[in-house]
Length: 402
Image (tube, rainbow, N blue to C red; front, side, top):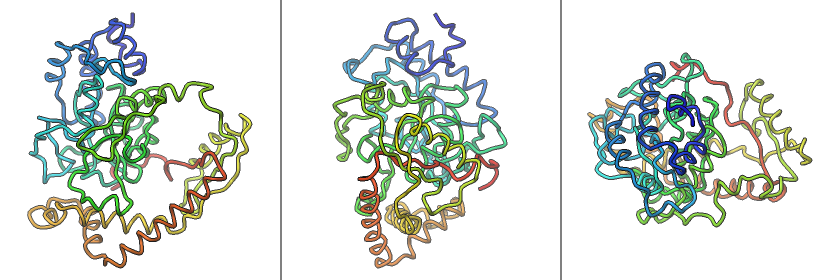
């Protein structure tokens, strides 16, 4: 039996097995995680919102739910939730002074699904204001530092969740992702993040207009974990239909935990590798590390080809459509009027102003270009099983760089 003081060192899959076999209790795990957060968080500031007593109460009266037979059931495992996701009764600030006193009246659909899947929410993790940015800082809770070097950033916008995992504070944590917010922090903190396909994980689109899908720009919720089996377990816990999200799907026929087992699927036979996708400067150290990783496929017999889709207009398309999404947000106009505007960080003001200044013709052209962009990628992927590229352009940078 693992001492309770060492439980934070175990993987999520191992801890869930201990819970299932009743070799450890949810309350012991809540206490272990709470102790680890209290000991390590002063140096990194990953978990500014905590509900330890609420979690203790839930763990003390824990009974497995009717859903315990489904893949991904967590048996009372404590988790953390990013502060872009509502948890009923907890602060829901979105990292903004505009919402610093806001308390969530209801759960996000993702939280409903995770609680049905046997999770216990232990607290909420830090995020940049409205999730905008690849460095996690805000004027409500301050900056989140990288546990490997507290002078460096943990990335963004799910930097609080990634830092918490890297510090061993919990076993699993949620994040969100529009343009890298699950993947960048995972890369910077040495954990694993996955942006799921749209609809795979249920969520709310806080304030975003119904035209978001039409614009082709989707933010998604998804999992962060310390390793791939833990990530698959967490995605199984998340991947369920919720009636309030019409895009959400039923779980796949083959669970993600089963799908990653060796021999379940054939290895890819043709893999494309690109250090920069033809559009971005990449630090040589990052490119070298990633090329070595991609070389594993060649060592396993795959054909590794230096190639990528034609993406020359990708950045312009994204900038226009992301700004249009923000302008379409019904709350956007209110945010840009005082006193809201005076509380926003300058980067968000710039983004809103760009969205409001764009013409319908500019947005329509970007949407049309996006369709061609998608088709080029689809055509490219008919020739390859995988496209490998770096997640980030640089190594973690100074945490005080905006």
